[in-house]
Image (tube, rainbow, N blue to C red; front, side):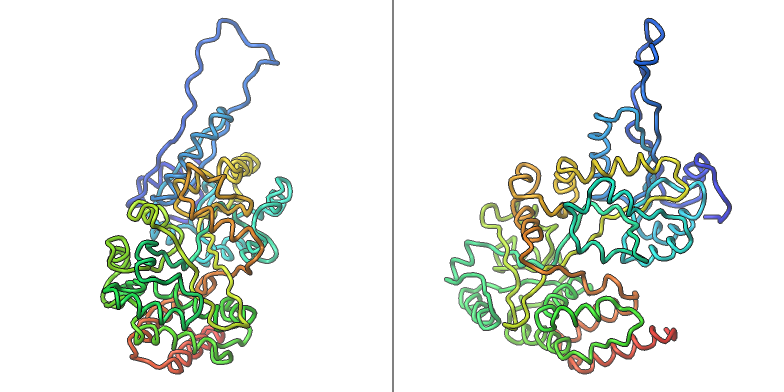
Length: 449
């Protein structure tokens, strides 16, 4: 997109004409008013119509946001929405240009881990939201952990949902068949895998052929082998000189990935199948368990019925209690050019209401971000396991951390994905992997990568 300024109408019109794959859609137009028999009095005057322009990508976000807009317009019929939908990769490549023009949409979906927040904030084209968080009292029920997504002590995102990984989804009938409860220690895990094989079943299915989702499991193991304070030094990836090699638990976690292969915890072919194939092993009754995130809850219930459940991966060291991992993928930024900022904030206050959060859980595939949502709140909207995990986050019984790659440069993320495979397959030693990471991290910190 050209860097010249666009009017509001030019933004929507020009984006359709010049951006391949972009869809500009008007949603939820207000119905035409019936002719009035006589001029209304001033006291009966209708509120002035407001148009909010939004940008996001197709998929679950588009689905639940449209449903929320429909509900919102029932209580605020004077508010109209114009929606622009752009494929995710195209949006990522053009979002800085789009948001840097005075024809920018009023709000747009962004992921904090994309690295765009700081650029947009430094350019002054997105609005800090601290005042709205205080005005609406959102901190009363949003997770304190969300403060990790601040930049220069300002929060720039309306965050409406979260996901967590990994969860060990399992078939309760098959677990009963092997005569064991879900494992709670590594010794129990290895014994459980032996019992699965004794019953001609695979143990824990994971398909990492595409370099995903094995890094979920690595971060899970690292939070059980490295004290949280030290784990987060590597997770944050700032300019301070913290390196994996300084903390033996990171190397140990790679070794556990290898041990789980040699002890046959991973289902056969962990590096030869993809995630869908691994999921199929659980759903088809060939594996007792499968590693994935909360978004699988509905599929698991559909496939397994009342046999669907989950357990948390065992604690590895007695002195390292494991945290829950949160990722806030559904975040939205407010344009500094917007003339309807307060109206946008009011809409997100509705999204963050319990009624709005039920729709997010029902259609979005993740968890409500509110920490006071319960299983009972979500009855009829989402699988009970979504409520169970949400209650775990809201209980205060667990520390909460981010996905290990949230703040990393893309090159380090790619290295982790590749080296998880190398660790499982035994192509590299844990010491070699950690040394590679620290070498590349040093280059980034020195500005040489």
